Length: 153
Image: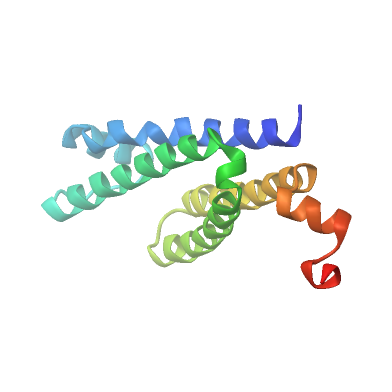
């Protein structure tokens, strides 16, 4: 498997998984409460603001999933954006660790959410850098063969 194929595969798996969050955005409130209880996060505050926040976060994750699927469809075009997405995911994972710990969530939740986001961002960054090295852009390839514009003048 080539570096580009690995990067495309990773973006698509994560993107398709995140698309499932759209279902949570329309999930009945009763299911949200029951799932929280099953996870040991009890009591789930039954207020309009809580359901609003849960649904909007689900929508956000779903749209991130759609974006990752779009990025995977044209790696050469979106290579720079994929690099920035990796850095943003790393920062988001670190901030999730802090916010989850401040929120008093169980340790397994904090490590599971923030840790997996951080690991995913680091892995995406590695995949992106590996793919970039294997497929330099035309401007990178030209400058490595012919030298910089300054040396040609």
